[in-house]
Image (spheres, rainbow, N blue to C red):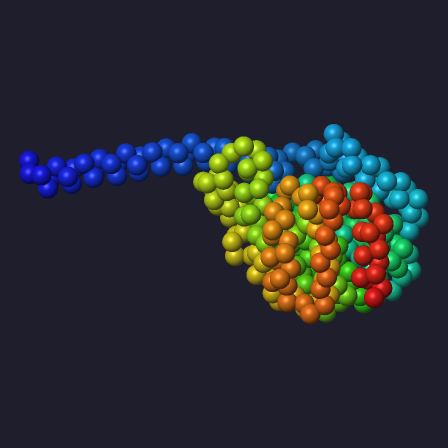
Length: 318
């Protein structure tokens, strides 16, 4: 055998070993990715993500939940049950607190939360002079659905909710308060149809959902590659959405309505560097960025109530 053939054979063996190792790793890790995807983003049973305290082990979360429930009880006489059908045929449930104002706020919440979590923000928008719309997102609470969609189809649902309230109750001006994934939904709505929007409030926004996947996967002590890429493929397979094609960082360039960013330096679920990145990309000429030194992801208000409320009320009544 000539030296040339020997060298070629060695290269072929190395390539074969490397390719075999990659294929083994890909399919081995795919099981981890699929488990994480189904645990975090798929409702497999009716009691998963049902209405209730989603995180009773977290003290701040439980305080928020309890305060929200009290607000809901105190204002039950203003509450009306509402329902719409999504574009893909899901029955979605919500509630409308009609205080007789001429504008309304719709609260779009994070993954696995229900409208009971939104109650915590009800008093804030009530004192800002807004009727309050709270909803169970698809695959959560009393709404139908199995798959969450990283805010993509949820954004379409939010547009339908706004249209429903506009036509049913004659409300001409809306504010969207988006938290985590809800912030992406708010961006998607504002970028596509802002005719009824007075502004959007984004708490803990992110540039791409892929970045969120990487943060969450690191927190679980798993390798981000190839798990996050595999999870993005699972989103396409099961939920029929592409988290690479629909990203807040791109969509926000088309947002023209007033935009308020509420961001925490202690956020461990989203990358704080993303906050300034998406702020800079925002196309609105009327935008404001507010840092909070303390407060966990989605828990800014509970430890910064005075400043948080002042910023929101000022934004709405400006």
